[in-house]
Structure formats: C-alpha cells, structure tokens
Length: 299
Image (cartoon, rainbow, N blue to C red; front, side):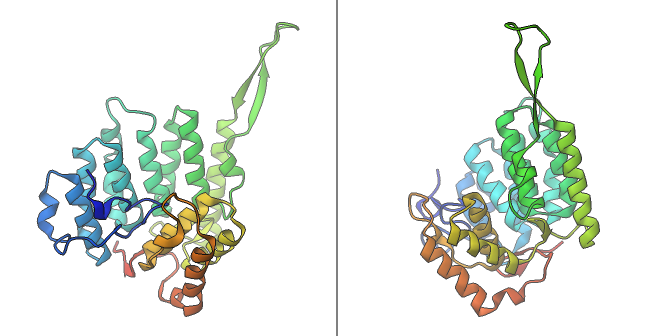
C-alpha cells in the first residue's frame, strides 16, 4: 500500500516526480532497497535518483520480475522512462519476452512501449516498433500509436491516427452484402520506418541520443511547445508529457500544474514554464542528452 507521502507521486496528473508530502528523513537509506514491500523500495529509489544516484535504477528491473501488480509496474515504468540509464532499459528490454511469458494480458506489453517511448532513445525505436507488431488488441494498439507519435511527430498527425482503414466487401449481392473494416497495418509500419529513418538521417542522430517530438531532445523546445499548448488547452496528453519531461530534466516543481481532480491549472502552469524560460535555465542542458533533476543520466 502506498504511503501517504507517496500517494500521488509518479502520476502525470498528480505530483509527478516529486513526493506528495515531505518524505521521512531516512527515505533514501539504501537498506530500503532490500525490502519485500515495493512501497518502501520505490520511494527510496526516487529519493536517490533525485540526488543523481542512478545505480539504484537496476532495482526497478528486479522489482518488475518479483512483483506482478499494475500499480507497482506503473511506478517502475515511470521511473525507468525518465531516470534510468539506457543500459538499464536495455537490460529490461532484453528480458521483456521472459516477463511476458507464458501468458500475459494485452496490456502487459504496453509497459515496454511506454518505457521505450518516454525514455526516447534512438536505439529503442526499432524495439518499440517490434512490440507494436506483436500487439493483438486494438485498444492497446491505439495507445501505443500515441506513444510512437510522441517520439516521431512534433504534433499528433498520421502516426497518432494509426493505420488507415479500408472497408472490404464480402462480395455478396445486395441485400446480403456486408463490409468489414481492414486496417492497413503494413502500410502503417512502412510509415513508421520511413519517418524514423528520415529523422535519423536528416538530423544525424546517434543511437544513444534522445529523440522526442520529431527531433533531438531539446528542453527549451519542449518548454516552448508546452507553454503554447497550455495557452490553447490543446492536446492535454502532450501537456502531461511535456510537464513530465520538464520536471524530470530539471527537477522543477510542477505539482501545481493540475488540481486534485487532475484538471489543468492553465494560469499557474503557464507561469511556471514562463519563469523557467525567462531565467534561461534551458542553457544548462545539452540537446540529445537526458537529465534527471539536473543530473546528467550516465550511459
């Protein structure tokens, strides 16, 4: 059971990558990592990651092997996405099929898609497309199409919309003729591959760099697009993503972005982002490189 100080943490519309309320003084004590209670382990990992101690992130992979609980996996996925070195995420990806076997819910594979998209590694995009190919549930496919769009498209476009649909007749004469929808999945996969390869080629991206919204990760660009979306109120999912990226990279406290019901507080959120941009703090962060709370994530 989540402790009160962690109750709303690691939630996009909650307190994000901060603690809900002040954590106990010993929350970062490494002895908690050996606990059988994941809700002692996870706050300890977050506290250490906030201080730039990235070696604790390997415990997240072990935790996913030990515990089959959606809330725990959600928390692990968020921390891996925004704070784990790519070496740790590669380790998780290498064991993904073992974690999925022998039987799994269609939603289980979605976790790996989320981690690969939010961690934004150029190296991870082929793995993300591979996972997409394996999906058999249309609702999950639509969620993963959003994840892929988040990496490859500046704004939600053809990739976010998913495969085109054709209506195929059964060939019978009226009134017996019926039509069924057919998703043009192979065409869509070609779109994904061509878009990805085009970005890598045109921007000369290296596999260890981070690619987000159709370009090399640039926290200034993320913040500028976030501010525009806050003003217009469009694409709430991209607003939540931008908030998490900004908060993860800088450690900026964005808890006031949303109220207790998860509603966007436009004026407050805009003021936080405007202040960040006006201070020039974005100059501290090298494009293409991931940071967590101002600490460069090692790889």
